[in-house]
Length: 232
Image (tube, rainbow, N blue to C red; front, side):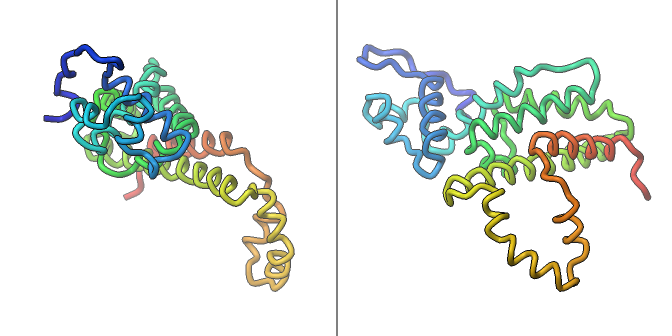
């Protein structure tokens, strides 16, 4: 039986009371600090001050633990609520998803695999799908599936790229501007060959784009594409 449908174990006399909510909150705190690679039930038990075997009354394995953690994050995304206009709902959910991934970078690692089926994840999915179903250009279930696929592909790709850049900057001690400066002389020599004229335009004439503004701009482009009638 999925963890969502199993009742919580009955409280018992113990120095440290436990619940799935408390276990998930501790796991999220550890994952925020150290990432998913360093996360284990043993470490969570140590943080809580209990024996590891006690946790197995609440979660049977690491996969269930991740399910609980993810759904806590989805609960916060669901809190943004629905709006009367479909586009506002989709924009708000997408922006909340990006903010959640930046706050909990491990969350980005768990996007794009098998669907999340916790109650809050389902609530977010329902709100998104219901809103998109009202968009112009979405005329049936096939259109809706494609629209959701395009939207999710953009969101997942965008947040993973942003999270990866942040991690790279931390691990190397070099942010994007410093990396560009270090490769500047080499890139200048390559562009002077004339073999990469379009890249040269992007480098020389292109502005340094703000991540949040770029996300919102490209999200709007995706929604504009969804609302238009696709070409045959």
